[in-house]
Amino acid sequence: MLSQQQWRFPGEEIVINGQRYTIDTWLNAQQCERHQVYAATRADGLKAAVKFYPWSARAMPYAYQHTWTHLGRERDVSRQCVLEWSARQDDCPFLVKLLGRAQVWRGQRWQWCLATELVAGIPAEAYLKQKQYEEGALLRFAAGVADTLAQWHNGGVAHGDPHLGNVMVNGMGEAYQVTFIDYNNVHHPHFYYCQRFHCFTAYRPYEADLANDYGVFGEGFRTSLASLPVPLGLGQRLLEAFDDHYHAARR
Ligand SMILES: Nc1ncnc2c1ncn2[C@@H]1O[C@H](COP(=O)(O)OP(=O)(O)OP(=O)(O)O)[C@@H](O)[C@H]1O
Ligand SMILES: [Mg+2]
Image 1: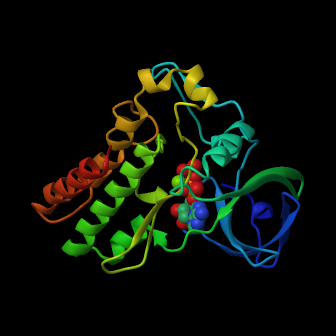
Image 2: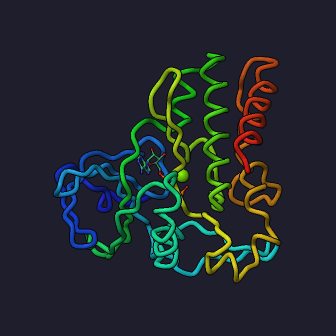
């Protein structure tokens, strides 16, 4: 558990890439995650999400011998990941816009943080609770995630850990937007560590985004949909909606 010293308070200011940000609210206070994420406002008014890391940035990802790939937790704030993520920003509009990373002094130590554009909406977990057992909404959600994941894969990027906590849903009703957040385990064939660990041949990250048999970093999105507690018969239809949309959108 993190000490109170490390919590940020509304009105507190930090500087990232020479820009001043004011902390607004704590976004994942209910989730007790390792990383604290806050909504913040940049001096020019832009709304941001600022993620704080409990330990140092692990610029060097872990290597798991049994998967022969590179997976890690603090990778998204590492210099390498930030550079590679920024470089793809123009080609990949589905990626959340990265605003910068910084080490900021808090209490008695330096802490890494990462600022991204604030994604409107709510995490899918909360969304599904609100809409529990509402068939149309669940099917639209499955289709929306499938379309978004296919877009990622068409753009060459694998998310690496797509689950209900890493998806934001914006807008209710017919037209809503699904956005993946949390890029700890992002893969692309041009990324330095993907090449070094040959992960596109050894690990197959696109398939692992759907169903992950490797036993590390999630089970894959299709598998997490299959384990949602929904009424009898609907689970299968959710998977069908997901598969139909994914395959129709995947090039
Ligand atoms: N760009 C963003 N816009 C809006 N909310 C965000 C954004 N990034 C994160 N959040 C909020 O913070 C929560 C946690 O974010 P994130 O998934 O990046 O961290 P985490 O799950 O603690 O990290 P990890 O899975 O790497 O341990 C999300 O569920 C969401 O509520
Ligand atoms: Mg997460």
